[in-house]
Image (cartoon, rainbow, N blue to C red):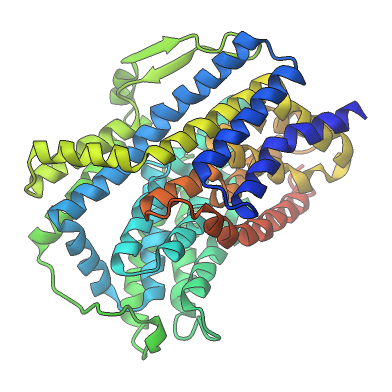
Length: 513
C-alpha cells in the first residue's frame, strides 16, 4: 500500500504539468515553477529529504539548466536573429523555396532533414528552435511550424549532440556502445520511416495529402534510416544522425527535382514565393554561420579526440549536491556546443557585414526575449534533480518493475519517456533510468543491450511533449502562453509512438536474449 501511495505522490509533479499545460492552459514558466514547488514539498515532507540537500539539488538543477542547456538554446536563437538582422535568412529562405514550392517537401527538408542535422550536431533545443523559426519565416503558421519540428525532433535525439544520450547510456550501464547504438536504430527504424509521412500528412491537411509525393516521402525516410543504421553498426554513436540527416536532405532535394514533376495542388503551394536565383557567393555568406557551426562542433567533438581532450581540461568542478547519490558537477567551459555556436554566430555575422556592437545588442535582445523560457528550463531541471535525489523517481520505477514482471519490456520505453518528459533531455533519461533498465533486464533474464536501448527509444518519443522542448518551440516562433496548443498537437503522436515502441521492444526481447 505504501509503495502505491508513494508512486502516486511521486507522479504528482508530472500529472500537474500535463493538467496545467492542457486543461488549465497555464503558461509553461508558471506551470513548471509550480511543479517545482510541488516536487520540493513532496521531497522534503514525504521522502524526508534533508533541507540542505533539497536546496543543493535545486541549485544543481539550475546550474545544469544554465550550462550547457540554456547557453546552447540562446546561441541557436542568437544565430538565427543575426541572420535575420543581416537579411541573410531571406537568402536561405529563397534557396529553400527555390528547391520547390511544395510546402510538404519544404517541411521534409527543413523540419526533418535540417532539424535532424542540428540535433546531431548541437542538440539541446537547436533542432526545434532553428527549423521552426525558418518555417515560420517562410510563411508557415507558427503553431504548425512548432508542432512539425517537435515531432520531427523525436527520433534524431537518440544520437543528438554527437551521440551524447547513447554514449552516456553506455557509460552508465557499462554496455558496448556499438550494441546500444545498433539496437537503438533497430527500435526506431519504423518511426524513422513513418515520421516523414506524419509530417506530410500534417502539412497536406486534405483528403489527399500524399498526392504525388509518396515516393519522395519514402525516400526521405529511408535515406535517413539506412546511413544511420550503417554508421551506428560500424562506427558507433557519434555520427549516425549527422550523416543520416545530410543524406536525407540531399536525397529529398534530388527526389523532388526528378520525381516532383507533376502538378502540385494549389493548397500545397507556398504562397507568394517565387523561385529566385542565388549566387554561390551569396549562398556561402548566408550559410556561413551554419557552416561554421558544423565545422566547429565537428572539430571540437570527441571525433577529434586530442583537441577535445585539450578543451576538456578547461573546466571547473564543484560539489553542489553533497547528499546520497551526488557527485561533483563539472562546468566544461570550452568543450560545450553553446560556446562554439555563439562564436560561429559572431564570425558568421561579421562575414555577413554586421558590426560587433550590433551583434552584442542582438545577443542582449535574444536573452531578454527568452527570459520566460529560461525560467521554464531552470524550474524543470531543478524538479528533475529533486525527484531523482529524493527517491521519487526510484518510487516510480519500483512499481513498474514489481507489477509488470515478464511484460516489463512493454513498459521499459515508457519509463524512459518519463525521464525525458521531466527533464527535456534524452541524456538525463539515460542517467535517471539507464542503470535501472540494465539491472531489471538482468533480473528478468532479458538482453541488457536491448532493454537499455529501449530506454533511449522511449526517451526520444517524449521530446515532442516535454515542457522544455515546448518552451524552446514557443520561444522560437513567439507563441508565449500557447504551450497548450503545442502539447495538444503532439501528444496523440507521442501516445501512438510510445505504444508501438513498447510492442517492438516486447517482441524484440523474445529474439534478443
